[in-house]
Image 1 (tube, rainbow, N blue to C red):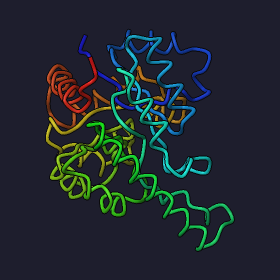
Image 2: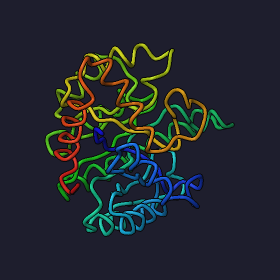
Image 3: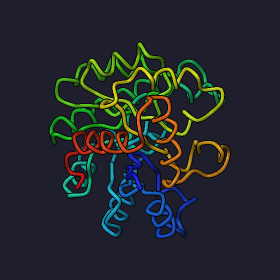
Image 4: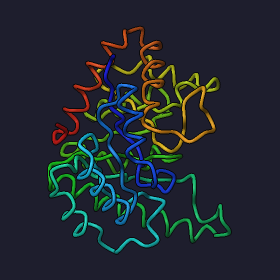
Length: 268
């Protein structure tokens, strides 16, 4: 069986609380031998490290998600720096910019939006600075905000590579990211009937510049769309990516695993 890695999952979410061993086992049966579980705040980042310590196939990414900054300290670096010393912490993130969920979508006003955007930028910069300091790469979130995300990221692109995860933008956007030395990763969205633009981007992405992921528990691929996603479903996404790219599963397995090891050097 061809082997794949789930390069972005959220196993710290409550939906997985009581069945981590079973989730890992189902992934192994599907040929998913490495799972990178992603922090979105300090608590989930700490939890990700605990899970990585307990399970050989799990690795952790630690950081603050742009939608989870209400409780973040003014400087997130000291506590994250401490976590990054762990040998199974392979990157900083999930960090970035999100303009899809702004205060105005929940009763706020334009001033609230402006203040929130500034906070996102501040914390994003801190995490990119930490990644550069520690010679780690970053897992990038850019929902409805690719331009402002790239505007900030470009300042660090000579020191930090980014995994622009759950990528759904067009080919031209992908090419800009690749030109910065970074890469993109694709979720189960690639299997959705209404996601032809995503498949077009997959087709145009160089084979060695992409990774596959689930973003579990979100975005389950067909035929499980709308249900809880889990790392075992990485295989379904990989099958569709291979089909779109016109390559065998064996080739996709070999190249994407090599890309993951290059991007996450601490991944064993």
